[in-house]
Image 1 (cartoon, helix red, strand yellow):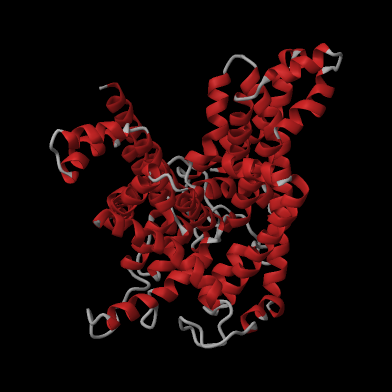
Image 2: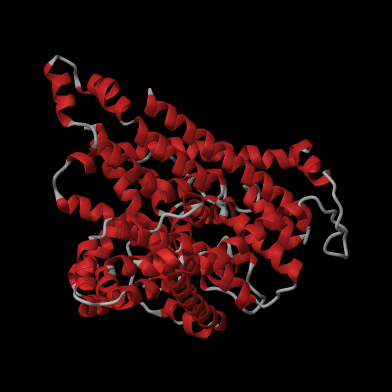
Length: 282
Length: 261
């Protein structure tokens, strides 16, 4: 196409404009993180590391980082555990009805507003909700458990939210494992557990890494779920950022916290990606 | 046996809030499951609470305009990225997908920072900019994927028969990209309509989006009107899908469905 060949930059110019604006926004984020916060004004333009020092030396703020990473790690592990059987089923079962149902569920849960889903979970986990109702009727507990507005609620909601991602990351990888390898192992005498541990699981590692990457990064950056399900008593780094910017109008410190979150995200993303590359080579 | 139990449990887990949400929206008052009756009372606040209608309008307008802008920017950009070799191509490809790698909150804060710094206070401008930035990567990704698998022979045949580039693009390329374009529209609009983490930094006091209003409802009211709002939206989407299917045909819809997944 000669028009394309002669003017590639013309067609891509609007897109580049948007991107450049975005880069400027990120740049201004960095600049503001070095400014000083003064009550009454928005900020005072200087160059100071006090915001970074404040965040990285105060255990109160570091705790946000720790809570974010810890809870996200728990959610990723639980999600992996729950999604592997579903992914295996999807990969091996030929029934299109089963695939269709799970696909539809995953898509609808993605398209439905987070707030609505969280509301449904708060109802389900409440003292009179379906979870406590089930546990009580089975006689496993004698009075309702406090399952809302705490860490448990956050974990459940976040696991729910990442499940579609982990399931589909794993399905692709499991589909690539030749079933005859599993059959071969079993014909050589290995039972189902041994086959799984020695054949299926190791071969599905790229899928596991992809699932971990996708879910963990999504979790550490999440905002609404920790805010609504946590009840305000604790929060993730993104909740701290929101509080600083919107409630205290402390743009410098909020920007610093954002930069730190960005750095952590990039570092983990790059690190896990590198792990994936090395595994692929070996 | 155990894996199958876990799988069944997980699927049940996936379905629970969706089903509960729809069922609860028709509850007459008691938030029990199963329902003690059928009532539309929780749909009433959708009309009486002023913030619902106005925020719904904002979300629809911003979603439509932002998606349109993203398509207008993303389709030409994808054409260039897929079909042309030029300096910096790989870098620009990564750059176009970069908003996906940045935490949504950071996107919101950085945009607020730059808007305050240059003095842009209009919430509509702020929201539109933010939503274009977060929807553009999806458009570029979907359209690029479709263009990469594109059979150029049909285009070449058209040009051999005398059509110039623009005519070929208009009559051949675009129609063949229909599934991908529908998928891109769905992805873009959905991302914009449901966004919270970016929008929360860009809205004004009276100019806000539907998800943010629903968020305040969970604190202010915490009643099934939230579920009713979702019921209304899901109902509308279903009707929209049926209309789209009549217009575009079920095969194009399935094609878009497959591209989206």
